[in-house]
Length: 258
Ligand code: IPD
Ligand code: CA
Ligand code: CA
Image 1: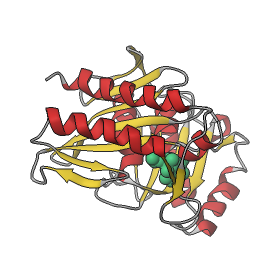
Image 2: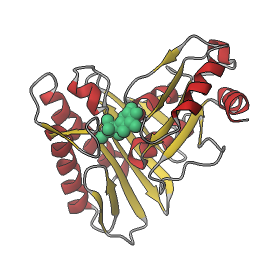
Image 3: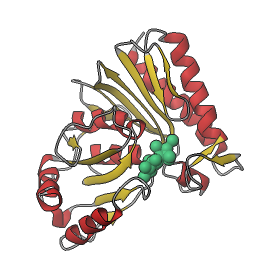
């Protein structure tokens, strides 16, 4: 099986389901809290992706947002899936959401596909082979001052110390006015990979939010770490990340983490 085409085909297939229901009424329900929602489309996409992986890759392990762990628990490859990242945007008809599918080999990020079905943009990378957007090579920006940086900064209110993130904004807003909050972790990370956004900092993320995009950013020449400067631990259910090119990543670590 050609892993590269298979992952992208899965993400495109899920993207078609997402696009088909865009701007149409969708059944939805709350999950862990009233603000944490899942729609019938999240579930339909996940079912589509899981059934294909279970059929074609029975030896692999799977971690997927709505279902949790399944497949072969001792598989060396793990699929980490967010069938629809940016569900709130999707519900609100804000066209910024994606399907995110990553793999790890023995715990190390291997390949990732982040597909935006509205703009038909496929961000993709496999370790050692560079990162692409619709087949064209991409790289992170070369902006080297926070003053010029477009920075996405976000948190999940029930999972992080909000005060700390407000302090980050206070500190960074002395130097840049270009804050953004996009509402899809995987897609904003893909934007970091292609240089549209210079840096992204968020707390309260889950492995499926970041697994695919981490390898895409790294293959695009960027740096992805937690707030201690360590590689992101995809076994952690509560992930904080800082990412950007190496200059901005370094500057952010100096300014806010200290
Ligand atoms: C969410 C989005 C959002 C981030 C949340 C995620 P979902 O994922 O990525 O940008 O702030 O932490 O849970 O629920 O839309 O898949
Ligand atoms: Ca998500
Ligand atoms: Ca999701």
